[in-house]
Length: 283
Image (cartoon, rainbow, N blue to C red; front, top):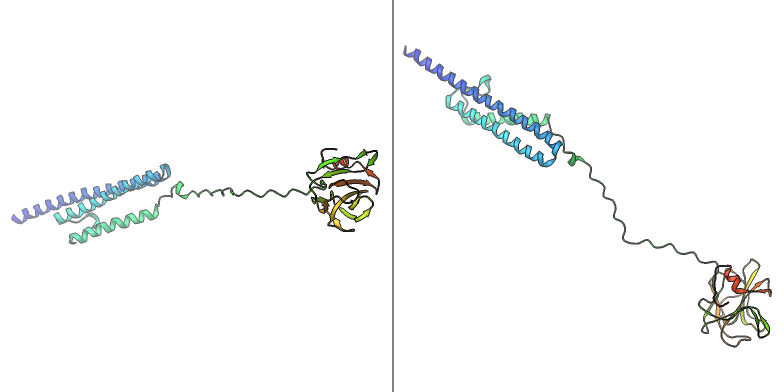
């Protein structure tokens, strides 16, 4: 009779232990389900609301994991207290308490690692989006302006004052125009051409230069103090050919400038220059 009572008490204790173990296992399963649900929400929160919501979801996942681990620890404590075993052979009946706890924690960690590998959350759109290429900063150094083309025709002595124009003067024909600046001022070829003559060559003109422009027109520069070109030399528009002086029949330092349409067929020089874009006020 006494043995029967002991067997009944042992059977009741085992049933109570199994009932407690069943409740703990269900609690563990609920914790795992909660953990999976939270991780699922965390994965979709990354896509919906970005990094901040994802961080909050990860914090919730950590809390769910803590719940799961707490349930496992409670299972170990219960089994240790009642000396029972988990259903399905989850834990050995005679296992040491610390070893059992470590086994439960290792088993939970393995399951979490497997789930993380299978269901890795997709990266946030903001994290995977390609960073926009920065547009190059505009250069602060201004580009140099293209050089202006050299004019085809220029004034023979820029800035000079007109002292006499083409026409009758003192009862005789004045066949050119006179320009005055301080003695020695450079005198320039009005256009490109070839030096036809240079030096003391014509009576009354002193030192002079004649340039043939190759289009039927010649220009004559007289009363120079010196020359810097020689016959046959090619010259360009604006090139210095001599310096202002007062040689020959002259009343003072000036440049006597003539335009010939064919040699010694002088024409009005101011109009001829204006037709070529060169304006000399005074005539």
